[in-house]
Length: 293
Image (cartoon, rainbow, N blue to C red):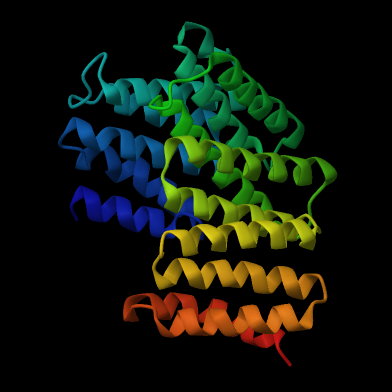
C-alpha cells in the first residue's frame, strides 16, 4: 500500500477503531514516508489519534520524535515546524513543560488551540482556558490575514464544535465551549477562507445552537447560511444542508409550516445532487422526512 492510500484508510477508520489505527500508524507509517511533504500529514493524524481519541500524550510524543528523526525530515523545514507544534500540544495536554515560550506568536496560538481540541472532552475547564488564551492572543496580535494561525484557529474551532455537538449530554462548561468554538470558527473562516467556508461556518453555528437548545438562534444562522448560498448560486449540496439546518431549527421551535417548507426545499436540492453525493446524503434526507407527519 502506498502512503496516500494508507493515510486515507487510516483517516476513514480512526474514529471507529482508534487503537487499531494507532497501532498501524506506529508500525507502518514511518516506513511509508519517502519525502518530506508526507511527514506533516502523517504527524497531523498521529497527533489527532493519540491526542483527541486516545489521550495517550506520552506515546504520541514518542512517535512524533521518531518522525522528527526520519531521514526525510530536514532541520528547520516545514515538517519539523509542524512536528514541534504537535509535540508541544501533546506536552500541554500531558501537563508537562510548556514549550510555547520559544515559538513564534503564530505557532503559540496554534499549539494552544490544538491542545484545547484534545482536552475538550477530557478536561473541559482546561480546554476552555487554553482556547480562550489562543483567541485572546490572536486578537491582541492583530494577525495578518495570510497568517496560518487564522486557518488553524478556524479548523480547530470547527472541530471542537463538532466534537461537542455529538455528545449525547453536555455539561454547562461543554455547552459554553461548544458555542465559543462555533463562533470562533465563523469569525476565522471569514478571514482565512472564502464564501464557501463562511457559509459552512454558518451551518455549523446553526447546528451548535440547536444542540445548545436555542432554536431561534439556530434558525437565524441557518438563514444566514442560505443567504450566502443564494448570493453565490451555490451547488445543490450546499442548498441541501442549508435547508436541513433550517428544517431542524423550525422543528425544534414547533413551527410546522416552516419545517414543512424547509423539508420540501431540502428534497428539491437532494433531487439536484450529483449521483455520487446522493448515497451519503440519503440518511440526512430520511431523517428530515421523518420530521413531517
